[in-house]
Image (cartoon, rainbow, N blue to C red; front, side):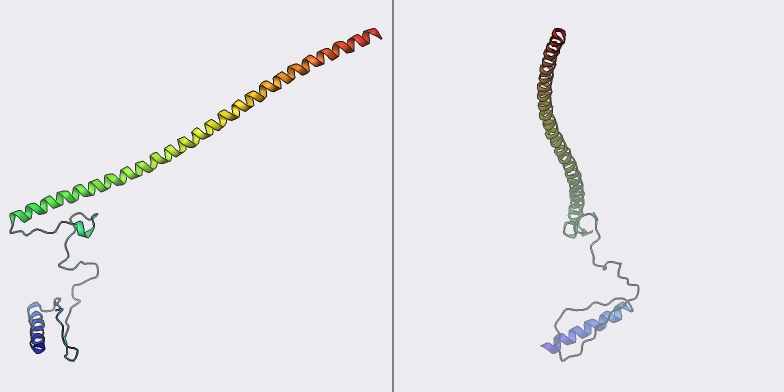
Length: 167
């Protein structure tokens, strides 16, 4: 049984080599016993690390995660094509909604910052109002003390003049 799997694997590899020339070769994932030799062929011709594999799904909406990307349709099926178009529209709408959410979150941060600033200014204004009230009261008290001092000074002047006049 193991020999037949190995034989099939070996034939598949040879068939692929003949059919693809110097291009890339498929590697089977079938298990091969450790004591049997295995030949693995691959080619680096026309390959670069930047190019995606041939079976990679192209990104329809690059901003979306891979799992949210619309899958390519089966071109033979009208229903598949329609589902693909709908999925593309939904993906685009999703991208737009995410973009709008990001803008709204940024606006929210700005408004919160403005609100914090307004609250700080309100607290500052309340503090200034309390200070104004205290200073106004202190000013009233000082004016009263000043007028009392002026009155007392006037009395002392009068007394001094009386003494000067009697001497």
